Length: 74
Image (cartoon, rainbow, N blue to C red; front, top):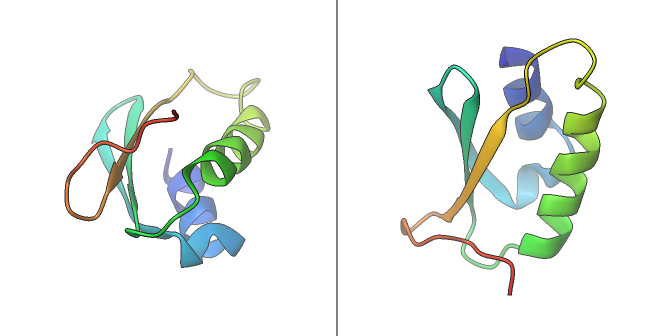
């Protein structure tokens, strides 16, 4: 899980991702900047996450904006 958090914070997504918090053992909260491109971020995070599927339990991702509102795909 810590590897996933580090990767998300240090990749090209770092401009759009304000923070990544571990909420529980298999759940991350990804805090996005207010002007973040949610579709692009979700797609990229899923690509990164899929690289780890064979080595660990699936991770549930919750996307929220920095003001606390839910970032949903419309």
